[in-house]
Length: 218
Length: 266
Image (cartoon, rainbow over all chains, first blue to last red; front, side):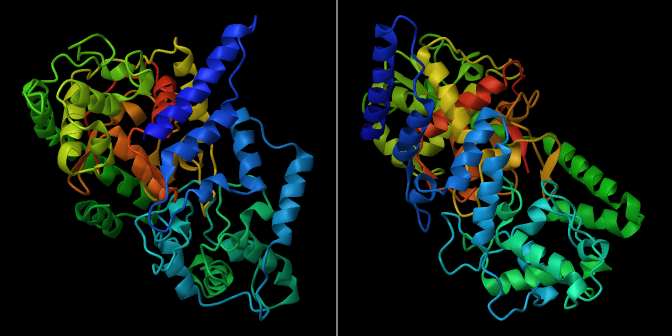
């Protein structure tokens, strides 16, 4: 704790001295100060390391800065970030995009895993219902993301293995794997990209959304 | 979600038409919340906190009655709605809980660093929570008005804003992922938009609060800590500058909101 206080005091002190000397008060470098405060305030706990904040990627850094500024990313930067995330999408190794929608429902219901009180053996959930309506039978759903009820039906997916469905099947996989590939600063996690869900789990969630037999499409 | 809430929600499901289902469920939950208001166990923590304030304790066998919470030694009423703020004696930004630890150290002779390291719900941390509960209750109905005069108070607002929007962890979550827009929910839980004034008794104006789901009294430090835990962030130190800066950002945004703390939550 002592180091924290000293670091912050030193930084604030430096800012105050600069402000005192200049004819017009200098603005402290708030971004730098925030980085220092993050390093001094957080500690590793359980499976969660401080590096998950201090070494986050360019996508998160640019989107955080855009949020602070209250302005979306400029179009060119957004397109570049999306292209880089799309390039990083891992497509199904066996070419099979759909798994078992029943498994997908279980994954969508679960919000478990990856907190500092979880151990590494916990099977991660997808957290899907926290933000989305999915199966209409589940009334406890969040509204941060759009409703996904009738997701496949609305998009005309009668046979997910048909050439007509190819584009939407690939988009659905890509969106779950890495949501930032299609919307640079989406609120949605990058479930495959950051290792929240395994490839097999992503396959099941895709089935929940696109299998004509899934309750989502009834 | 508690069992009784599920029963209410399930009951509503069986008897109403499809279109009315959601509204009925929401109504049931509102009724459940109204029932919670009948008696708030936070009152027990208030009584304990008031006793602890006046009791001679610690190596120096002294009370906390001369503790300066920002409005002068011993002034409790109105202190809560002006915290966190800058304290010249410690030359630090402090919130209610970290300030209480300072007073426990300077007046009573406790080891402040030890208390800060103690887990929530254990030992002296329980006393800090009870004290914070009583002190917040002494400002019930008063409006938030954090000072923004000292340079550090302004700096911490700016840092708090950056922390609020900081995306990280495996889920890329920031505080704003859930608290950046109006009228959103996680599952059935309403989420206040904390980028602006969320209104009377919402957000910082509701903590400390008694949590029915786990039977615990939570101060703001634990509230922020558990938000960060669910964000899949690492552990924010008790009273660390990150938690104080976030408290300043939220508190300044809530300027003019009436405090209902200590509140009761699901």
